[in-house]
Image 1 (spheres, one colour):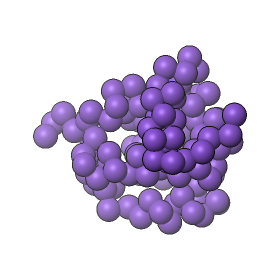
Image 2 (cartoon, one colour; image 1 turned 180 degrees about the vertical axis):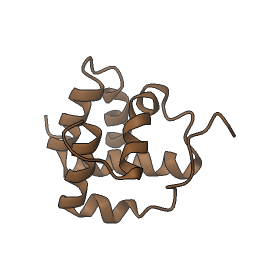
Image 3 (cartoon, helix red, strand yellow; image 1 turned 60 degrees about the vertical axis):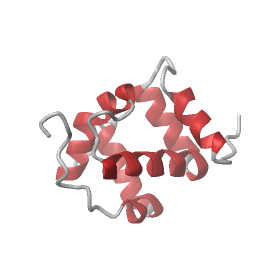
Length: 112
């Protein structure tokens, strides 16, 4: 399993982070290089670019589910944060469309 990311943080309560604006913004500041990182935030920051580009191919099943949950949540509830993340990690929009199309297929409406 050397080709997978660590599963050390797979049990983290993502819903709690996503639904707590202060926690969410703290994680976003970390991955965007604007603030301090917790150990799990640093892990996310270290692998986020690669995970986006490869469709999460080194992710564990829990991480794949978590990534999908997080992306869908951000598109649906925190569009400004989603836009900031994609501008930072996907300036050419190569991957954003794929993730947004998947969210739309689940019935998530994305305001233009």
